[in-house]
Image (tube, rainbow, N blue to C red; front, side, top):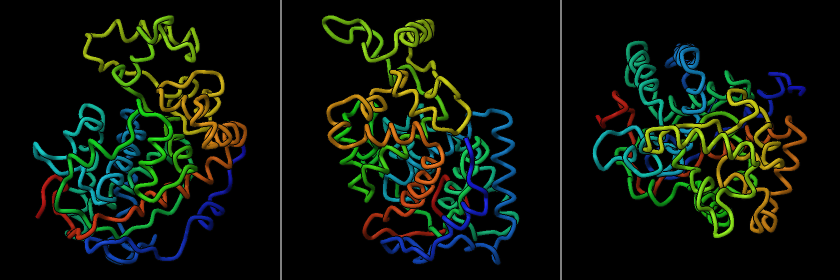
Length: 331
């Protein structure tokens, strides 16, 4: 697949200042926000993400997921990083699922030494996610920076607002719309499943007792169903064994995720629903899946813009922000 040149990506994605709603945000987000106050920022984040992915390639996907799960609750305010029993970390969609906290901690510690109390944890998460994509073979894009960190976590918001792998397409589209994202964003950001892994607990509903007539989901390709049944039955029974979300190229950010959906090799019910469900057909998600399966460059281009839009989800009304010294606790 041909890639656009770096210059084209930079030009396409360097946009003028955007504003986040709420009191907890600096009004203007720009790609050069820290150029004078913390010029070491990009090197520090790059190095930590590179080292983490060299040790475990999956970490790129984990950092991307961390950014997504942060932004969908209260906006991109790093509230997911806050410790505490009532924190978002312990919400059902995040527990034993979201990872990468230690990488963010290490980045933040180095930044506090280099430029104390300057770079927000929310910006660290956004930038780390972008390098996770880039080092997995995905597109480069200028990350808009200048966020502040929230002071309050929202566990119930995470429990109820994050899309679930068991939800129908219509419900997922509604949750995206609630934060200002559209149907194209649903399909494009689902394409992040081209990297990463999922626990058996998130797709075991497709492997046994699926219906009165079928043990496994008949829309799951037979050989893949067999291998997943062996994997999940062979674990210790806690549902925490993991399988690649993209069985074709699990560590490469490409458009194989969409190609897999066309051949019934999508792992999650929510993934396959984009292509095969009546709701997906009606919402035109099927058309988008087919388009991205045949045009990887278009997927990359649209992914960049969806990430920028997601990074600008408005903060909760009345939010009050700060630059945390330690990402796990408020100052």
